[in-house]
Amino acid sequence: MKKINVIKEIQELKNQLSYSKNVGFFFGAGTSAALGIPNISQLTESVEKSLTGDFTKNFELVKKDIETILTDRDVNIEDILNQIRRIRDITREKDDKKYLDIDGDAAKKLDLAICKEIYKILIEKEKDADIQNTKKLMAWLNMQNRDFSKEIFTSNYDLIFEKSLEEIQIPYFDGFVGSYEPFFLSENVERFVENDDITKPWIRLWKIHGSLSWFWKKEKDIDAHRIVRLGRIENIESEGNEIVIYPSKEKYDSSRKQPFIAYFDRLKTFLSKGELLFIISGYSFSDQHINEIIFNSLRQNNRLHIIVFAYSDSTIEELYKLSSSYLNIGAFGPKKGIANGELVDWEIDADELKDDKTSAYYWNEADNKLIIGDFTKLIDFIVSNSGLKENIEHIAHE
Image 1 (cartoon, rainbow, N blue to C red):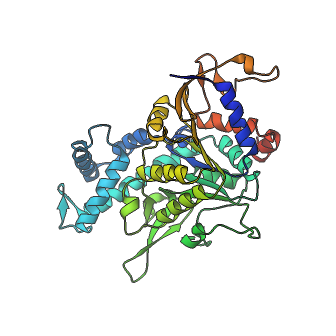
Image 2: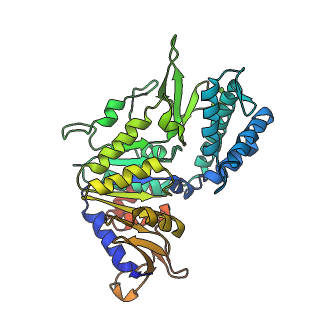
Image 3: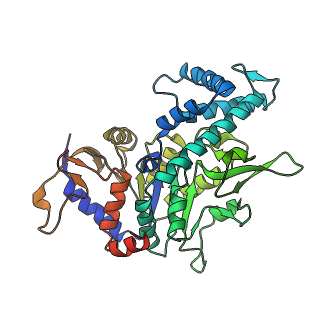
């Protein structure tokens, strides 16, 4: 395998971050995991342990059923939620209709119980999460070119980004409007703002898998629901509305599609609109719908350049299988990367460093590996090379 001097690639990365006028982000589960939020495996285990009685029995029935089909990896909470929602759909949530010996009403109650447990687990972990670095990232992004829309897409449904933005009082927009029970307005997601729009400098935060602060609210006197954002919930057990967590196939084929379709359309449009540096961190490329948008955009927009930061080399190897025909995507893993359409091994030639420079903030000499695949290290790298470090740290109250 070809060896590449990582110092030269890092210098090119610095140039791209410094001179790109338009920068966007996609953050996957790995970014939250870097802050101490449970990953999918840990969350699955915690939810399973928290359930009791019939919830435990029905959870195990669903899990065992999926295990007979899914043999290449462990069953996770997303698989289980997806299957439970299929049961809700085919039984129309009726207590006299069953699948896997689980009636529709029991499936609905299990779904609600699981989502509430997810809420409690993640909210509790968020209390201990150090969001200092995410505040720095938001401060850095807020300082970028105001001629372009600043957009963050994320598959995470925790509230880390919202808390970071609000703590340092940076305005953002997520598609919801209102104050009492903010409601989703899809046309505001679809529209790209004009130069004279007061909200143009705001950061756009698109949560494509739902959020712990979104709930389905039943409309009065009609059999329909709308999504509202309720913000802080004091007691999730007393909340009568259903949490909007759609981390699985259901988000694409449910009759209650918004805001997911609006967000996916926004991602397509954003990636197709001219010159753009799009940074991906913490994403394993396991969602085929998102992958399709990314790779279609790489084909159709030759002014789009995507850079992927991965915590493990296995992600780099899997990405290479998908991306080897594209020259406008690069990737950085611990010991492997993708450069000019090739899978490469990193090596370091310290002679390339200038006398006043160091590689310590992106390269671990003891382990001989790149460290910016770690979300927190990536933020340190971006801030350190911004020329605005003192201002950013002041805004982040460090």
